Image 1 (spheres, rainbow, N blue to C red):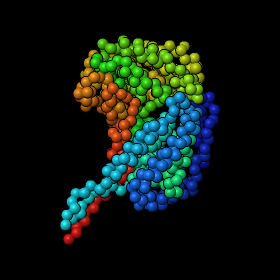
Image 2: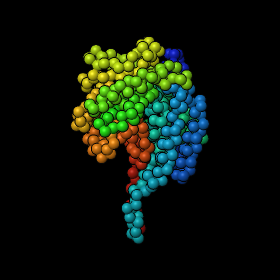
Image 3: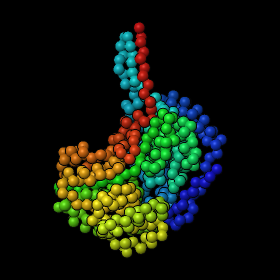
Image 4: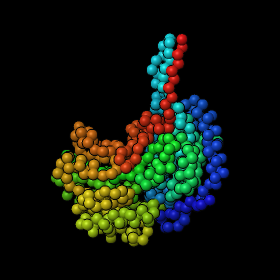
Length: 458
């Protein structure tokens, strides 16, 4: 057995340490899940929904303890109150649409034939969850998987092990073995995937991690859902509400210290608004408070680890060396010493796509801003990226936003908002952001399989 250790970004101390499971224990967990799933799938849908919603209510009741735990594990300030609003919203929607989404599609019901297409649970769903939104991202798959009649095995990120334990506690009233939180090494995880231990795998994380999972699953014919990297753009047209665009896009770039899957990492502003946008953005960001996330006054906590902070520092330094201009005075953020996970936010101008900060995922509190002449230039720049998760368009013209959206290589198009996940719409991406779909009615397709019935009556 090896150790899973969480180093708190607050002070660099060891906060949580857990041992990985033995091979024998893993085998027991898998056997228990398979047995529980058979019974669970036979329960009426309304009973499954009620039990899942009850579990989410238990999770919500833990929020007072969860919020400071998250601050200690990954650095998000306690003032923001955690993730339970989104957890409840997504659970409620998936519960509301379950009956319709999972109902058989009847092709014929006559005196001669009853023909229909049913949805069957796949069996055992393996969720590999990330640390940046450890409850929201996990719930995206856990809730529809359980409602559809599956068992779930959760492997949470080493940075947020207590999130996995809280979820296990919340779902503890479900049948024994149906939901399990496990501690596994990367090697154990790959071996289990290669052995076809699961019937569907959902992973949220890095492109490299997604590629490793695909290699492990090669030849197993198991379905995989992958939400990987992102470099999401915002585009501010000449007719945009400037104040709203600045406030929302900068929050989208800096919230959670920039550690958001669909956070804004690059902004293109029509040249007529460019200087005003930059001035207001710099003023807004300069007023942030970088500090201890357990302090209610803190608006920007440390990044989850010094390694992540150093990646962003490198992107900023390389851009400045290539001619970019840092618009936020680092002296305003004395907590950033360059020696730990505390990182001052930064707004860069005079940037271009030769710089890593405009091409590669930074996943931190930095954003580059470029002026553009027109829609065509903005579209070309937004598409000049190997990722495609979301894109945010700021305009008063909905038809123009839709027309621009049709030309952008992305999973979601926003108009006058960003950094949000609508559970009624499919959460998906393209290019190196990954593949698959979660939430909406399509989210049930990943955790079920089609089964055709052709019944001849006479």
